[in-house]
Amino acid sequence: MSLVVQKFGGTSLADAERIRSVADHVARTRRQGFEVVVVVSAMGRETDELLHLAAQVSDVQPGRELDMLITAGERKAMALLCMALAELDCPSSSFTGSQAGLITDTLHTRAKILEVRSERLRQALESGRVPVVGGAQGVSSDRDVTFLGRGGSDTTAVALAHALGADVCELYTDVSGVFTADPRIEPSARKLRELSFEEMLEMSASGCPKPETRSVEFARNHAVPLHVRSSFTWEPGTWVVSAEEAEKRRAEESSMEQAIISAVVHDTSEAKVTVTHVPDRPGIAARLFRSLADEHVNVGMIEQNVSIGGTTDISFTVPKAFLDVSLQVCRSHAEEIGANDVLADPDVANVSLIGAGMKTHPGIAATMFETLADEAINIEMISTSPIRISCVVHSDDVERAVQSLHAAFGL
Ligand code: ASP
Ligand code: MG
Image 1 (tube, rainbow, N blue to C red):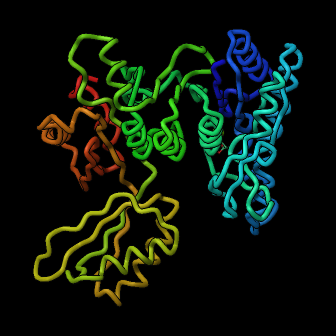
Image 2 (cartoon, helix red, strand yellow):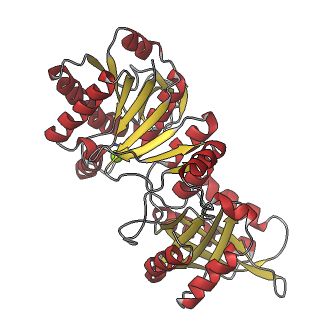
Image 3 (cartoon, rainbow, N blue to C red):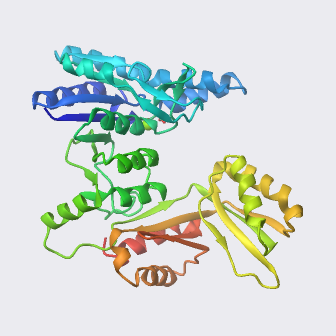
């Protein structure tokens, strides 16, 4: 029998009616002859609300207690969904992350999965039940409840799909799939029928909000096919599969020449830091970026120019939430590394073109820069991978950048 993991996000479970509609779908999938394992997120905005409540109660939030609090959201959702399934005569059992055998490290609020001991879920399946697992949670090697981080339910779902050998991991959300651009900015954006893991990973790391980046990484590493789709319309969504499989599906779909670019993605969550007049000698960048790493700053793009007169400017981007600590680190090192000044620019945005075809097609960067130039949009930084070109622009320009690139590349 085919096994499918179905993960439902917060909006899919926002109220009683939504939970009943999800239960209907799970029961229907079973009647179609599939074995089903369900992973649930917390209802609606509950995770945000719990975090807000914690902040109101205390300025001191020990990680262990925060994880205990947040994971209660998923626990509520899984019990309610099992009740809705019971009413449909679909036998099910809820499991916390710990009960489901998700063993994690001890890093509270952003734990990593170390191992999945899936015996209990297998037993539930063998006895004809649908296991409903609380997402984004596990139990640490210290036997404490852990939370995997925001969006971590996607990772739970992919990890279970891999451990149980599922045929597909379906990620249900409030949009009908992955789009060629954010439809709120570009109304003509189209749903993509398929993407390769690599393309999805680049998109997710460049600002595409769903699925969560870590889950895509896991899916790629273990070749778990993903199907990102809507729990409101239940229509087929976007498949994320291996590059070969994506190629095959595209060829089956149309005889037309395949698009070189798959999507344009933007990200407004980062800020830019510039350290000016840094002496151009070995060890300077090493010292600066080691100190940032020690403060858990996840640096995005980095740019260093050729030196003029023995000094150079180093610019890099960081998540806005890490701007203050990044500035502190840079300023505390400025004198030691002989830098002139540390400048912060929070009003930046990143716009990226992604497509496996750019590997073999010259001129993509040129067209991208010309398109931005025609819009009089200044490019502040550029970075590339074999299947991505990203530009940092002023945040006021980002919507125009997305719209003009979407048109220029015929998406
Ligand atoms: N409910 C958690 C969050 O909102 C986990 C998840 O949805 O994946 O971050
Ligand atoms: Mg969520």
